[in-house]
Each structure stands twice: as C-alpha cells, then as structure tokens.
Length: 414
Image (cartoon, rainbow, N blue to C red; front, top):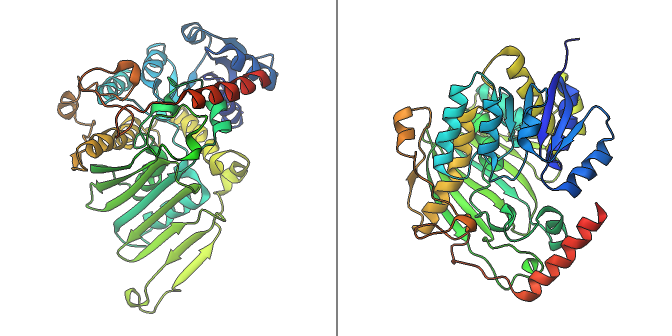
C-alpha cells in the first residue's frame, strides 16, 4: 500500500467531515483550521485523533507538513485561501463556490496555471448513482444528442437550522443572491453531457416579507430563481440554483434527440424514456430502476450528498497520483460558478442574455480582470447590487432577537 498523503482542512465543520472521508481514499487527515474556536474545539472532540493538529491561523496550518488542503471556509472567501495554499506548494480541493466575482475568477485561474499543483472543485452532485448512470448512458450514445436539460437544487432552511449554519447577517448564507449557488444544479448537467454554458438569462422570485419562514432568520436575499443557459452545443438548460421553494431535493433531466433521462427526487430511481418511432425494432418505452455505484466505489453509499462526498475526494486523490487533469478543473469550476454571478446581473436587467466568458482564453479573461461587481453588503458602494432584486432588505428587531436566541442555543450545545 502506498503512503498516504498528508491532508489539512480549512473549515472545522464541513472540512473536518470531508477530511474524514478523504481518509478512506489515500489521504491522512493531519491538520484542521478554523477561526471560530468553539467550532474548532467541537471538531477536536468529535475527531478524537491525536495525529491531528488544530489551528486558528490558516497561514500557520499551511506551514504544517502537508501535501494537500481542502478549502471549506466561507463559500464566498475561497479564492484567497486557495491561492495561498497553491503558493505554499499544496494541492487544493475547494468547496463551492469557486469565486465571488469575475475578477476573483481571473486570479484563481492564473494562480492555478502558475502552479504545478492540482486544483479541483469539490462539487459533489454530479456523482450520485443516478447522475453517474446518466453520464454513462449519454456517453454511450443511448439518448442521442443533448438538446434540453434541467437541474434543480431546492433546499429550504428553517430558522432553527439556519441558526446552526449562520453567525449573523454578515454570514454569506444571509446575503448571497439566490442565483449564485448554482454549481449543484449546473454541475451534473455539464458532467453528464460534456457541455459548458455559453450564455445565461436570469429571473428571480423576490423576497417575501409575509413568508413565516423568514422570521428568526437574518436572510436578506430572495426566495428563488431560474437561470436559462444556452450551452456550447446549442442545447437549452433550465437551472434552479439553491432555492427555498416548498420542496426538497436535487433533480436532473437530460433530453436528447433519441430519448430522455430523469432522476427522481423521491426514491433515487432513474427514469429512461424512448419513443417507439425512434427505433426499429422499438425499444422498451419507459424504464425505472435504481442504479448502482461502480464496483470500485460501492462503499460510497455510506457518505453524504448521495455518495458524492466520496467521489470528490477519490477523484482529487486520483488526479494527484496520476498527475492528470482533475474531473472538475478550474475552468469547469468557473463555468459552473459564473452563471450564478452573471445570472443575477441578467435578472437585475430584466432577464437579458449575457455571455458566459470562457476563461480558458487569456484574452477573454482580460475583459474580466477588474470586474469586482459583488453583492457583499460589506463591499457595497455605488454601482454594486444589493442581495435582493427588491433592494436592501430590512430585518425586523423581533426577527433579529429571535435569531440571536436560536444562535445562542446552538453555540451552547457545541
């Protein structure tokens, strides 16, 4: 057995979990960093591993003897942490989002290109058993040429659950526009079909002041959104990024010119449909079945996000060992993230189509080098957007007080 690679994680909650998963595929978790000490101490207690060193300073952790780092800090603050890890000579797997602004995307690409280390986005939804099966079927030509697709990520969060995830109104989950968390929806479509988004139109369902779900939460962004993406092969895709509609799940639909495939939100079954007139002799019109993981990864079912958390670490390790391009490289990561940023711009402009720049081309990147357009309230100035299409959302004093009560209960349990 080859020697395990030493791994550090930045982010004691999600990062510690991913580090434990990575332990199963060739890594050894040796360092954990988080700036919030109660969460760090809780991770130390849960891991109960004397071989793991705990840090509150990221730069100090990077000086630890590490081969690789998982960046799982705030979703809007990944680029600086990734860049520092690459500069320190570490391979990096970054959680979603890839970046917050298009200018950050330029810095990310150029940091990866200047490094001889592996960078991979830890987008896990393409690796459910159903999505892996759809990728296999599509790549085998079973439904013909990709024409239309859908990807949805619907995940409403109660006030009690949000208090465990959010520290206050400045936390990214409180203000991130609803179009931005797009990788869970577009990621499966891209990896199944091998296409990338070339343009995007954005539409938003605005914040609902009367929605009881919002009481006790410091949330300032809207309810839901739809992104319409024209892919580079001409196909059209409807994307619902992270949405708080009254539903729950991740659904993917792929329509070709010789058949359709669709994952079920209810029972992890796949539906494959053919029309009799497309085949002679006719094929079975509709099949419903539950796909299995590949033989090498049957144990993935034990891990989160439908097994996807296993595959991200597996493919990250494989790219390092093989010195190969990771399955979700920096260019795919930026494609997946860009549609959320540009989709919000489109929504604020009435849903107009916007080009999704391909950062594989250095000349195209140059147009975005200084594009620091951001919805972050801490960076607000003239010309910057608010997190809601309605403008600045004011949270009532009663709602703020309820959130502080719920948040303190969560902290007390750590």
